[in-house]
Amino acid sequence: MDVNKNSYTFAFAGIMVVVVAAILSFAATSLKPMQDENVKREKMQNILSSIGVEVSRDEAADNYQKYIAQELVINNNELKEGVVAFDVDMAKELKKPAEERNAPLYIADKDGETYFILPLRGKGLWGPIWGYIALKGDMNTIAGAIFDHKAETPGLGAEISTPIFMDQFPDKKILDEQGNFVSIQVMKGNAEGEHEVDGISGGTITSVGVQDMIDDCMKSYITFLKNYEAQNTAAHSSSTQNTNLATLSE
Image (cartoon, rainbow, N blue to C red; front, side, top):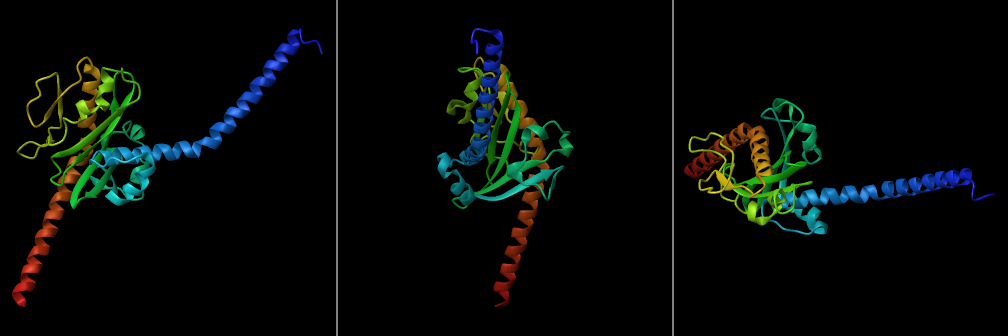
């Protein structure tokens, strides 16, 4: 065979393309279960991190089972049956009208305290941003927040995933004194109120994206959480009354 002919070059190149493509396809197929498991565990890490539980990826599954007491899906202020909260794709849900979205809600129990963890997803300057906000038992005060991004600029928008930004959120409130949802405002410096945090210097568009993400995603939960609180308060009051009556009858 004349290796100097063009036909040989084309044939050799074609064979190599097929062989390399087959190898890459096999590798991708073989590694996909491991990749999916890593993504799952990283998601568990982030959920736990929002309530201050920091664990390695290998420890995530066991600790998730330890701290996450319930997984719920909210749709138009009602519980949605037959949908697994952990499997809800927030990117797909945000393309739907607000009243048609499935909104995952994780209820955690840590040191005897109850926390409500709300997933978030939105748009930054260069790509998607996402995160989790954990509310304390009053369903108003933020216990913790974690954010991440796909392609924001290092040193600018990418700072949303650093402690200097995320550590501002604990003890901020999402409701005003009348119980109305006011979200969290990401300010251009000089954040002073209990509903405000400082934005990222030089990362204005990403900061606005975080504010819009919080506002848009959290609206799906507010009515449900208020009803949930009212139901729990009524149940607790009824239980207390029954206990008192039982004590009096003895």
